Length: 348
Ligand SMILES: [Fe+2]
View (spheres, rainbow, N blue to C red):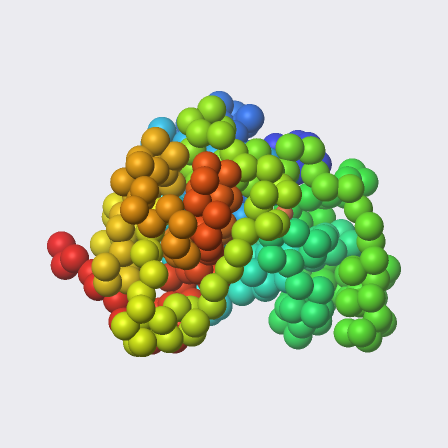
């Protein structure tokens, strides 16, 4: 097995490779280092089989799609990831085979709902859930302090003490730790009750990362930020929402509102299907094709995507161009399917 951190900066990416089969995965690749990744793969004569994100990143642009288009590798993300262009959705207990290696997926929500940790041999890649001497912030992108406490204490801290920990970020020059060390010495979480931890995490009062809006939205939509005008954070926070249950009630009462699905075509016809009668307009075409929705301009209109993130952007865009009732379907098609509400799919 080959294992190495690739970025040599505070923001970490890891290569895990099988030396017998000459195959590899890169976890959390960033756009700025793509050339370096390609050089390292060539130097070790490794074929890149997969790239994966431990979660939806808000502080840097993911290079997963770029690496896929350059190498033909497949993209792995958690089932709750709001991003398009995922080849393999994984969940708790799944394994990823890299030659002779088996990487176990642990769902460790908290920093974001789609956060995962990867566990192989005695190595644990924790993303931004468990950091060295810290834990990832929970104050944006759907974070939840209680969930994070449960993920760390109930899942990661049950692994053997000698398990080596490799986080997604480190700001103090550390490169590795161990579960035993974090369990006993992490000032954020060791010897804390769940209530104490929630209290600490909800009162951190940290500044938002630079360019969070541009980075997050471009990661989530996979559109370059010059392809359409991004709504402001304020506009995103003001978006109206409707639950899957409320929308289903409207449909059952024969008063369905217009529904616009903003995912890519392969997602619309894919595994999660789409809501019957929904109009399909991908997010990046929404502003230019908004005239197709003119008949519904003053009606409540429901925007739908995979997990409710792109649809929030879509609702903010439409609100900004004169659709005051544009509304986001909370949790998107993941939540809709979880409730077993009906979907249509085009069988390929
Ligand atoms: Fe993060």
